[in-house]
Length: 112
Length: 111
Image (cartoon, rainbow over all chains, first blue to last red; front, side, top):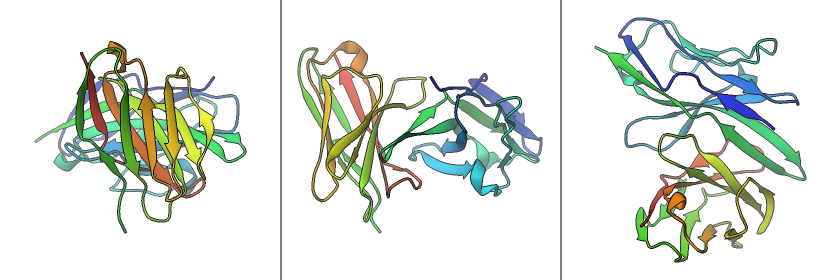
């Protein structure tokens, strides 16, 4: 069965410091991974997906199949980055059926 | 373009009762997925509907059921409510296997 682990419930960093939110996964197939973000009083929204290999709001994430990790990084944290971050694994089950398996989330707090 | 909407926003029910939650998918989307998010946890997949048929299910008992209508809106029904059913219920819509767009959720409290 697939599983996503986010080891930190809470991560506090100072503004301007680097940020790394950890995500490890367990999946027997070819993984497709996402990071979702939820800002205060807003709905869950997609931040980035590994297949697009793009940088959104200064965040990047590299899929490391050897270490089964998909850590989210940003070189300089901003106050507006404070939010709840969820790592998610996409599973395609065939016949048009698919689902996301989420980690428990990490709350990022950027200290001014 | 209208985003995903859910109703009601909050709901309080008593153990043993039944509840229906509603979701309107984003315009043009044909797939709706439902997730349960307990306090302090990530969303957990309940099931998915595509063109009015359930085509994927997570590890939830049969008392969790759903419907999808011709306009692709959807309902989640939960029978015989238990205290552990208290959670935020999220609906997400998508077009085939593209990005899932989430609604704001319905907060269900079972007492």
